[in-house]
Image (tube, rainbow, N blue to C red; front, side, top):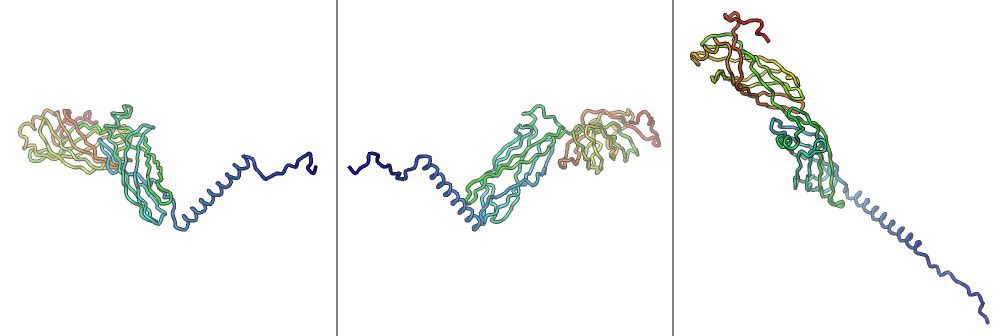
Length: 315
């Protein structure tokens, strides 16, 4: 026989499964790299890129005893040759991990091609809502806050993407100052015209100073209005302290008949005072109400006017 007892085994080039998977993986990686390279070349040629955003500032245009209005300035830069729509703006304000307010602003506008634009996001904090939800937040205190903003934009080539932003700061929960008229001193007295000085005690119960710029007020003595006025006087009401200021007032006692004379002779009377103070704070200007009803004060005359002003009456 021509055949051999030991047949020859010929390797036909078959590969095992691991070799096939390795070859397949390498092919897919090459395709991915190719697509990525093509995408980068298209992006570089056409000029498409992801927009950027940053919180540049936070304004407090209005703050009073009821609420605080905030405006968040967000600078968005669009490097693309076409405008991109700003689809939605989601925002959240929290303090120590607790939500204070949140919301959604839909269809927020368009960012011009190869341009940048500052988008203003208005927010409002209602103090009653905060205090009713979190009992440990006291009036007059300063609380930390964190603003989180998500911008949803639609970018060619990339599709819809979200730009997350954060900014931290502090905001007050204002408390109106407590006011008392300690005494009224007559600088010049006559029934035709009387000039008096109101000695005011103002207690600032906030955790921040108040820069007093102006005061408008009206005063009643025993239910008789002795007048109103405005005062421009700069002083500082130090936080958690009592301050004293003098403000003038002019009135005509004869308009009140014998009731005014009886009050002056008695040297003490009930009073009511209402008005507003204009103050500067580290968080912006505020107009705060002041009021005192059912108070009692002393009426004093200067010695040169024949009064019996004693040193022990001085504060």
